[in-house]
Length: 352
Image (cartoon, rainbow, N blue to C red):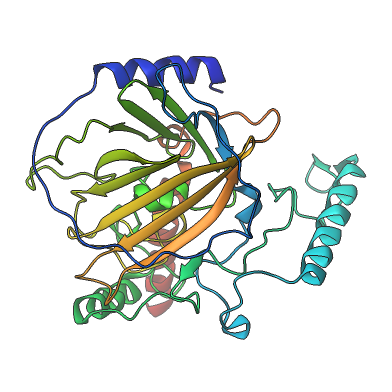
């Protein structure tokens, strides 16, 4: 487990020693879209050097069950009705109460102990109901734009190599980069998932560091208007540059590797993006505990138009970032591959 103070100190140290010069270009972003219901104007505090203070640990847990694309039945309805929100809140309260009733019981058959009522999910859950019907807010229907011919080609390739009981993995290469403990990519690192949704922001004069809990990737973002690195330098998380637009931190990221991750939860479940990908994020603190987050996706090789994701992230009492020891405990990789080979041998034996 990483304490808040230790993580902050390390991140600030990294910030103060970082710096790279190079060149790049930009493309227009998607039209602005409303992200949350109107709120009272609030002025964030300032850092000692005068920038808006966004520092803290935030989580997107409340949106872990919100789909990326909006269900067709909701049409252009971005927000749930008050009645729907009340129903969802009652369901969460019932689940929380049920979990508190759990007891330690011994399973005589398996000689193990189980905790609580197995009818209820003991995984992480939202603290409050999400207001939005989807994470995508633009286009207005909450759907991804149409794919380009290359995007459609990549979509077919993903379907042909998808891991399923019908297509056992031939090697580790058949798994995405997240399952292989390499990266979830920039978008996959901040989109809400089933657990590990922490994001820590640390600031120093001229720099912002954003640390993602799952796969423990940190982005060090200069604010001094330096150009992007050259096009020959690429990475899973890209090359980020930031600036202030009033009280909003705007971060533009380019120089991604081609075909590694996608704009989906954990960087998967969608078409792999290209090396033309440009992401623009906007971080706006709207009250002491809430940050509005927006992500504009612009990949002209894959999508026919830019599109936007938006949702709030919140600071919660006692929320901390935990060490994500992915490689050290990735026993599932060995088990899945050895299981596939055992399945193949069993099938071969049946044919003899």
